Amino acid sequence: MTTAVIIVAAGSGSRLGSPLPKAFVPVAGAPMLQRALGALTDWTRWDSLVLVVPEGYEAPAQALATGMESVHVVVGGETRGDSVQQGLAALPEGTSYVLIHDAARALMPPEVFDRVLDALESGAKGVIPHVPVVDTLVTVGDLSSTQGGVNRDELGSVQTPQGFGVEALVNAYASTTQEFTDDAAVLRSAGHEVLGVEGHPRGFKITYPDDLLRAESLLGSNGAPLVAVAMDVHQFDSGEPLRLAGLDWPGEPGLSGHSDGDAVLHAIVDAILNAAGLGDLGTHFGSARPEFAGANSQVFLDHTLGLLKDYGLQVSSVAVQVVAESPKIGPRREEAETTLSALVGAPVSLSATTTDGLGFTGRGEGLLAIATAVLRRL
Image (cartoon, rainbow, N blue to C red):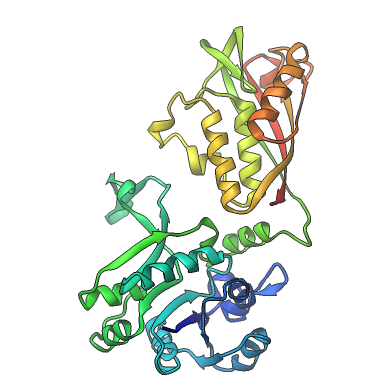
């Protein structure tokens, strides 16, 4: 049994705002295709590799694969399906399995390639990696009207590499003239079942400039730390108990909010997400998520630290400043720093200041927390 990998790299870079084809757009100093090839230098279970590139980019693609054996470079077609079929036609005779991977998913780790091939070797005709859908979903109608009720727990976001028995996929393509969004849909159209395996958050598709920034943030620059600053503001609510910096503050007015209103933890989570290029607090835990109503903000932090681990990142340190007339942080600073450091798993320093009676904090209407998070690679 032999295994081939096809990397589809024939798309344009127009949505990235680049004159270069997408696979040749630099990502932290190296072409996107080179980043995608990096997974295959660490994954040794393939026997041949086909690169599908735009016309005129055959030589640059071959150069990026210098040192890799059994590499074939072919020119892609007008559609993704055409490009995949060009790649299939270039496979060495007798190839049993093929993993089809998008160059735009340039950070996918080798472990996902393993899961896909393991499923094929266990008898599956088609295999896709997928990750959970985290956003609330709606259907959008005419005039931008929306309808809810879409159960995201039953959905997955599909990634690549997608794996197939070569004969089954070639026959499936030969039996249809319809254009599909991925190769698994082609296989399903021929009546075959497609199995799912666990994907990885790093396998997101680089499509827009923000995706490119996210990828570059994850890759870092020469091992430099990733740093971001975020702030969180909450209004005081005398009807709620105060939860701040992971501590209870008896006798102090609480903070209004969707969760427990812990502005210090919220600012820390926001800074961590920003430094990692993973969105912000609202993206993951916004008011549209009823399951987080009244939640202890430690839930947000724990979830965020789990995301960091998936992306090969770790918190190095955090600094937080609270701007408020009350509560008085000084008497409990050491206790708060000890609690926060234990929750974050890294040193956390806490300071406080006032605005000398100016603004909403000076009038005692609310509290502001500013956090600076420093991340490092595992």
